[in-house]
Length: 517
Image (cartoon, rainbow, N blue to C red):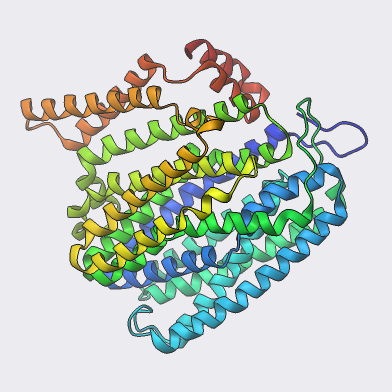
């Protein structure tokens, strides 16, 4: 799909190809960095890195004020409308809010250094805390710039910087390890601060070069356009999104990790943090986090028939569900061997955390789908009703983490997420939000996975000498074969692939359409 008239052509398919190519590269590099760090650091050092990373992610979300989703919702529409005055006003407000949030964050870090250095900050020195402050500022700015690039569908602008960031970070850690230097959690934090700011500089230089061509970032379409949006309405939209983010954040992986620190010993906390980080890294390769951020600007820019929106979201969810179930089969049957292979032997007994943590992340994908449906229709009042649920969840986590340990940090977030999703589904039942989940066919896929696990357990009982890893691979392969037989995708869902699939793959799209039912 290209632009028409005198404007510069933008090929959506090529933009998505570049986006996905770099994203897969960054996923593999990030996965390698995750394994490198856990192999290099002792449990105490990894615990330090994990808790600082959790604080960074939590602070960024708390102080985001809905900036990211506001950029994704308003920048595409304002750009397509040619409302550059409104666009400039919006970006100035975003810059002021982000600048103010960074100052607040630096003040909060100073308070933590004064009152919680020996507890929450693991007794680290002032240099480590200063490096963490730099890391936070760079990460916050990078997040906003990435959203801006995605809004204009110029993904290559930020994709390369992410690759350079992870490459530099991995190379520094590997070089220090090979040269015999002692590496601590503070070392990884300092390296992350430097490489993140390198990424910020690269993105800024690329966006500055893009500035004269903003007017060319228009996409022609036969779809009916959405009503014009005004930048004056952006603060209210951002407030609603912020309410949603905070509701989700209270039991997000980073916050759960912070609470877990007080109720788990060092080895258990390090194992839990590694499993959580590993699952987050793997989930980034799943369709939810891979595709949804790319589709949201298109939903915001043009009116798509409700059936088209629900078909696209249902396709993403089913693919995510298949990936989750395959991951659960593999790790449930051979998780101990996998953990011992990619991390430290003392973490292997905690292999059962893998499918449970990934289930929490699957619930977050469902919540994100509900958010997109709500965002496109500009109906956000339901998010205010979620706050009491989230506050009760965090209170329960705070009161029980020390007593119940892993049981609390696993099942309280699951319960709270399920309640939040249920409230949103109930509130938007009239717009058929359930269609994005397609419960009947999703249940068929889940039943197929359960049957494959049962078959694997019977095979293990009959042949105790059969290797767990081999059995897990065979069961996972059987699951994919069963999915092919069940055919959970609908024809209209497969048609949604044309949004992101390049023309060279259209024959594959037609073959999948014939297979769907």
